[in-house]
Each structure stands twice: as C-alpha cells, then as structure tokens.
Image 1: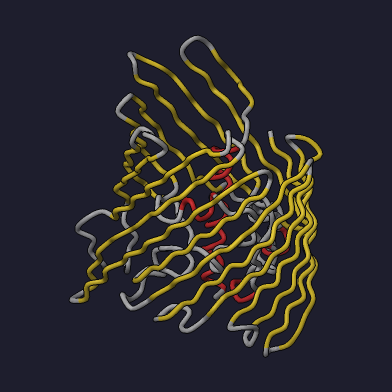
Image 2 (image 1 turned 180 degrees about the vertical axis):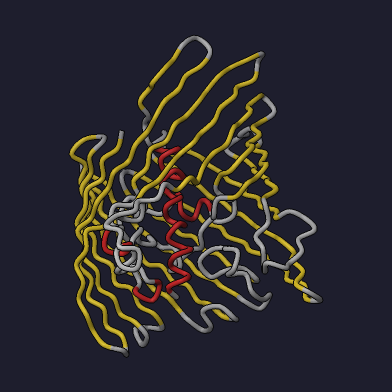
Length: 379
C-alpha cells in the first residue's frame, strides 16, 4: 500500500490546475492587442490531527500539511492570429511537508520536487478546440471538479499511507471516485450548443506491464450539459464520461474500461452534488502504469454531497464510498464522511475547518478520525 501512496500522491498534485484553470483569477504579466501572458498561484496549509484505530494498534498523529490541493504556480498564454485563437498552459506543483519523510536514508532535510502536470497548447476556432500536449484525462474529470471539498482536506486513510505521507491528502479519491491522471493527448472539444459540449481524446496508453503491447491508443470521452433556470438563480450541470483501452501481456488480453457520470444542482445558495463510476481492468485509485493488472480488477463508487453558501460562509456535508474487487485491493471498501466550514475573508483568502471519518471495510481494517484547520490563499 505504501507504493500505491507514492504513485497516487502525484495524483492529487495534479488536481490543483483542474480547479484553478477553471475558477481562479490570474495576474496579467503582459498584454497587448493580440496576445497576453498571465500567472496564477495557490498556497494552502493545514494543521491536521488524526486518530487512527487498526487491528495492529492505535495512534494519534499531528502534522502540518498541504490539503487536497498542493501549492502551485501556473502560466497561461493567449494569442490571436489569422482568425485562430492560440493558447497554452504550463503549471508546476510543490509540497510543503516533505521534511520528515525525505530525511533518513539520504539524510536530506528537505527535497521539494517540482511536479509538472500540465504543459499543452490549444487551437480554438468556430469549429471547436484542439488541445495538444499533456493535460488531465477526460474520464472522471468532472467527478473531481464538482467535489465540494476540492479546497479542503478529505480522505487521509493510513491504508493509503496518507497520514505521514509527504504530499497531499486524497480528497475523495479512492473513496468516491478515481483520478483522471494527466496524459499526453490530442483532444477535440466541440463548441457549446444549447448547453451541450463533447470532448473526445486519444491518450498515451497506460502500460499494463513493461512487456505489454498496446496497438491502439487509450480513448477517453466526456459529454456535459449546463443550464440556468429561475432567472439565472439556479443552475444544473450533468456529465457522463468513458474510457477504453486494450493491452496484451503475452497471450493475455486485458480490456480496460470505465464509465462515470453525475449531476450538480444549485439554487439560492444550496447545492446538491451526486456522482458515480465503475471500472474494469483499471486501478482502484487511477489507471496508473503498474496498477493495471488483470481484467477482473473491478472498482465502483459514488459521492453524495450537499453544500449551503450564505454571506461569506459555506457549509458542506460529504459522503463517498468505493468498493474494490479483483487482484488489486481485493475486497476492500473505503468510506469517507466529511463535514467542512469554509469562511471567505475576501476573494483570495479562505479558511477551512473540516472533520473527516475514513473507514476501511466498515472500520474493521481502519477507522481514521481527522480534524484539520487550514487556510487557502490564491492570486
């Protein structure tokens, strides 16, 4: 499970740009009649206290950590030439709490690696958009984007190595949805028409084994619908996404498939969010290279959330569940119940008080009660 954490910690390191590129304002560095360059930044830090109960024993642990989102800096580029809009994004992430983890064998007090999860260009016209480069996958993308705890802390199961891990928590990854791992890709997005939009991409395939053969690329798609109602006071979003890939390991063929979907409804400060997924032949956290093992590896889960925003406050209740069967995480079930209070001091500074109860196999393998208090600052 520790090796799963090492790989999957990079998972949440990528989520920040998923959120920030959609919701955060950026600082303009240069702008003229045809082009512009801007930058965006996020810094978050949490004091976290976890009480862990397992068959091997009990322990309490306090840490100062980043939350579900890491700290990052991103750069955005826009230029219009001959009727085409050219764009690009490069973003880089670091963690805060790597000191204790990386001390030891190498004797290093700190070693914050720079993690690049987006490096792509876009071409836009009246026919839609073409994305070329490295970006997040389409399958499961909206499950995370709609998560009401995206700026919070979330699941920090010790079974995933998250309590003392040197990177981020998991939010609801592994306890409600899987992760759309960044991939080299060529993706087409259609223009939005009456609230509908489609995205279809060919992705660099995930290797099932170092000797595996992937004759065709990984295919992913997402279809979304958005609408306003009650004089723009309410909003309704729905999505469905899918993934398929075939790998051959010797004489064995592994078909990796998945489908996910969800809805989010908001009205007068109240929002309800529900999503679900099911995969076969993929990892239980994400389709990582060494996690895709056999076709009978199955994972399914759902996330149910309610949130209410009034004045500068936002209250969230969240419950996520994942059940895994097959070669990876055989028969394990993960549940995460969360409550959070977000207070906005201004548009760029938010405090978070959060409680999460994470259980593995209904608490028989792990019960983890975590209280976290943090701050998120954006530019």
